[in-house]
Structures are given as structure tokens and as C-alpha cells.
Image (cartoon, rainbow, N blue to C red; front, side):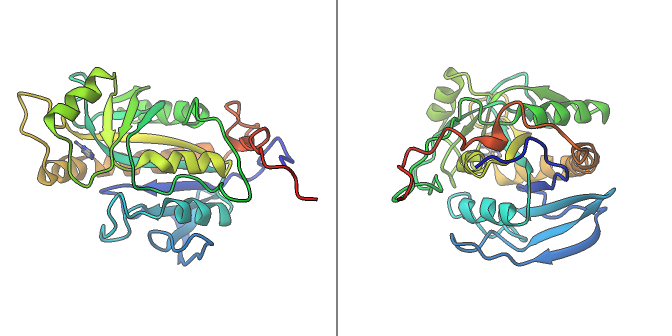
Length: 278
Ligand code: ADE
């Protein structure tokens, strides 16, 4: 049951994608092992403080990038964050661009998602306890706005709004698929934000993504088809920007805040459909 309308002490979770395997500047740093009923998260979680704000960092693919997008245990990752008290998650994700006006190096605060994944466990609910949360707006606009404002203040090339197409991977798209996704109006393409965003909603954690464009995917005729080499090159050039953004936003998000206007923090209030147990 939803009990309080304020989180006096927000705890900020950061899920780092390709190129972001730790964060600097934390005091009281400690990597902690968390076990969950859904198995092990991608790695230990790095806990610490930034300007007095508690935060928890998790490298989505594990340190050393050893877990593929399909193999990531998204349920364990979100459950581990919930166990450590995380109230707000910022997801940092490398993506390809599906639009001419979003060149490599652009940061996109996405607000919609199209889920084309097929091989993932997508819900905490099922046999015994059924719930249907709303995903009409899958990202938290409150955090999204702060992400955008902070990125602007840092002078980054940042765009507010966009649709993230999540593909299964691990192969990149075919040219026909890339053009299909463009015809659907998708802005960027990646392999990880679903079911992560959906599970965060089920866990009543606010979740927002800043997507870092690393390449033009394969539809763009004037650019080579995407390769890991190209992705890493742009990632390396942008890693310091991503780190600066994370370090700037944590203290800002850590201030006391009202109940989430988007309803992320009480998503289960009208979602449970299973009859209460007698
Ligand atoms: N991650 C980074 N670039 C990508 C692309 N072009 N397709 C899917 N995932 C990506």
C-alpha cells in the first residue's frame, strides 16, 4: 500500500550502460553484493554519497562488460536497487541514431519506448499475484526535465523527447529493420531499456534514461554501418560528459521532493487484479 506522499531521503540509483562501469567522486564507496529472489544482479553495487546524497551505481553489463543485453538479469538488477532503498533511477544508455538531426555525440532524454525484445522475463507479477501497471508514459518526466536542464547547463548537445526502439540483439539491425523503425518514428535504437523501465515502474521506482548517441545505425547512406569500434570511439569521447552529468544531477535530485506527479512512485495503487487472500 502507498503510505507516504514524500520521500524525505531519496536514494539515487544509476544504471551505467556501455562505457560507464563506475562513477567517481563518491565518498564512503563500497561495492556490495546483493542477493535477490530472482538471482544475482549484473555485478556488485557501488554504494556511496555525493554531496550528502545517497547513491547506488550498477554497471548493467557487469564490470568488464561480460553480460549481453539478452542475458542481463533485469529483475535482479531492479530488485537489488529496491532492496538498497533506491527511489529514483537514472539509466545511461548507448544508442544508435535513427534520425539525421541526432548525430553521434547527442544526448537524448527519451520519453517513449517501443519494445521489440522477445527473450526476456518482463514482469515481477504472474502466477498467484497478477498486476497490470500503466506504461503509457514509461519514463519519469520529473527526472527527465532535471536531466535535460542539467545537461543544458553543462553545455551538452541535448534533446528532450524521443522514442527508444529496444531490439533484442546482440546483432545490430538489418538495413530493412533500421528503415522500418525509422518509418515508425523511432528516434534512437538500443538493446537494454526494456524490460528495465517496465520493471522499475512495477517496483514503484521513478526511472529516466539519458541515451547517448554513438552512431547512425545502418540506414544512413553517408556513414559506415555501425560497428563496435565506432560505438567505442564515440563512447570514449563522451564518457566524461556522461560522468559530469551524473555527478551534477545526483545532488540536485537528492533534495526533498513531492510525490511524483507522473505517479511512478505509486504505480501499483490501482494495478493489482488478483483477489486479496482470505
Ligand atoms: N547501441 C549503440 N548503437 C546501437 C545500434 N546502432 N543499434 C543497437 N544498439 C546500439
